[in-house]
Length: 111
Length: 113
Image (cartoon, rainbow over the protein chains, first blue to last red):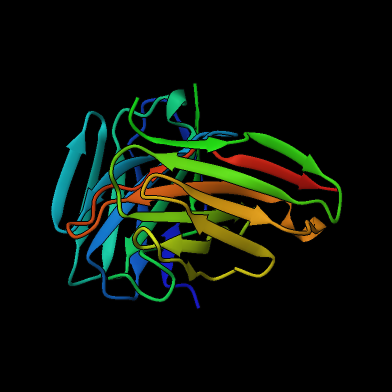
């Protein structure tokens, strides 16, 4: 079973478009992480949140604990935003360690 | 620079060879992790260490061993590499209690032929 589901799996956008990536989870969590991975690159943390909303530049992350759902928004998208975006939940230190990962959303932004 | 340092970045092994992947963090984090990333599978936990001196199996531990040498360092060893261990490996660390952000190493791309 997939405890963390992301949608869409793949997303192609034109430069300047507003982008939304969704994450739903089925376990109790203490926090949710959004991560970014560029092709052939390492993994970078974008946000960690346990309630409400956070904003860094053009990126906005929201979470609804009651609905077990989070969204990552990118405003005014740019080709450099092309990457895989990964949602991960912190499952109170469950049997798999702390983080359970979604399979990622591959975003391609065309100029 | 603060962060997680992981070596090597690339490695090719022959079946049956052994190797150790090294990981060190300088953020005084208690928890450290080893993951593998395969196409279509996402990140899967191999082993983790919640604190110095402790290690626990994750989802896919077979064929691997780990050592938490001290608070900073957490190594992953492949005793007898198999083609099924061809993957990209990531080390990560997180703080305790308030659940800090996760910090990842740059990854090791391992090919076993």
